[in-house]
Image 1: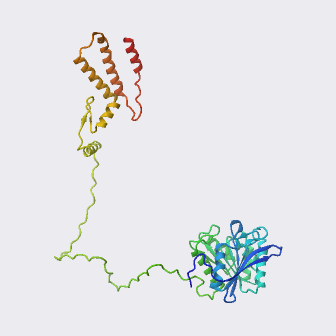
Image 2: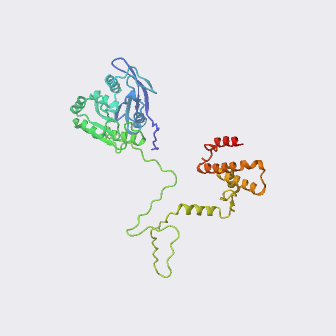
Image 3: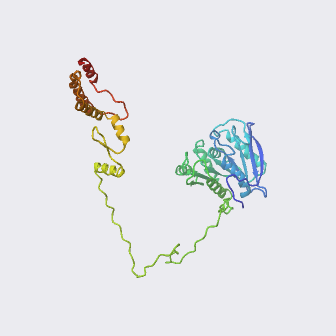
Length: 399
């Protein structure tokens, strides 16, 4: 048998049909029959809620119509309930929360009987399980399988009718279902003694994934056609590439051979035991000043030191010294003071300038004190110290 994937379509006689209900509504549907022989069973599929996207082409039912006629010799009858649209078309009427949908089910059941189909089983999914429980307990239905039953529209009296009829009932409940968990399902289906509730691990309400599609239909076919040995699960897919080597079983006590170059054996016959390393000794953290000095010496050990002639501060690069001279106001005042002292020592001052020397020296001292107390923010323009304008005005008055 060829490998079956999610979109595999196996041979079958498929026929588009139209169902007519008692209230004269026309419903679109499809009948799939096996090619080789007469069907051993007939499955009527009742789809999920159309308000949530449910239809006859929902993936569980579409894949059943594609595969089961060829794999299990069963007939698949599916249809769109009133007001539901799919690729096959739109059924007439309006959605009625499972009440009038009973007429749609009766039309499908009558169609199956008219075609001479036997051993009729119902398979409902979500909303379709409530329609099955509400209207499916009639002759000639043999039993029903429920996928993800929410029990939202059906009532306990509907379950009681199934208990009285003793028709087989199988409920497959995902463990991660959003509406009804397996534990709650067992409590609610307890009034139906012949109902078997099976929890499906890691599965959600919509049965997404090829793995869960096969689990659902294998369990359903074990109930519908118990004579099938292993359901319809296809063989595992073939492994691509080189076949995997099977390791031979070793006798007890024997170890597998080591790969690679064999270890050198000691020539003197002495077995050497590797030394055990002790715990690592944590180094004491360096003093911040010592670390700063170490990093300066590490990065600048090959650099020449340049000294500022104003404040005697050393620099490694000429660009640093130039930036210092242009931006450091205190250093600028010291250099101006040195120039002023040199001017007084080497050139005699004119008699007219003598009254201003004292005031100029005082302004130098005052400005140096003010600038020394200030902190110049990096990257911003230098602001005039407070009182500088008053000082300039007083100097002009003295002149």
